[in-house]
Length: 129
Image (cartoon, rainbow, N blue to C red):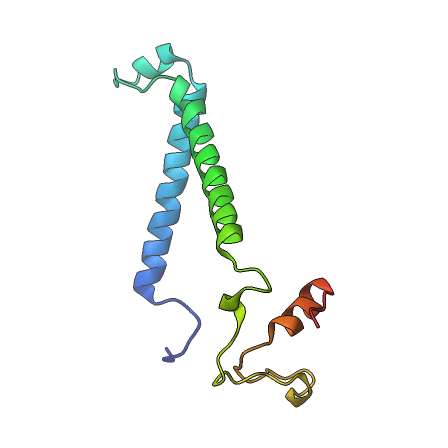
């Protein structure tokens, strides 16, 4: 096998298969627990099963938590981003500014700083000149 091959190593392939199989098994057990009546579940020999309330409540709590987390992160980023006329958005004299005319069409531009006016023009059609 080549050193830079995109195919996974055999160990990773086994781990991936086991993880896939276990996730499918957990999903199947969850669906059985959620939809099969309690009397049938007790016949399997297991006498303790969580309440059916948690079959609906746990996914609802998780979805709400994730949605709230993304909302909070978005709001936090919006409040901590400096405005266009803030002194925090001024670059230092050592910044290497990317000149748009230097780039080759279809090529990858050099890693340089982009002026804020250029970014706003390309993203929003705004000009702060």
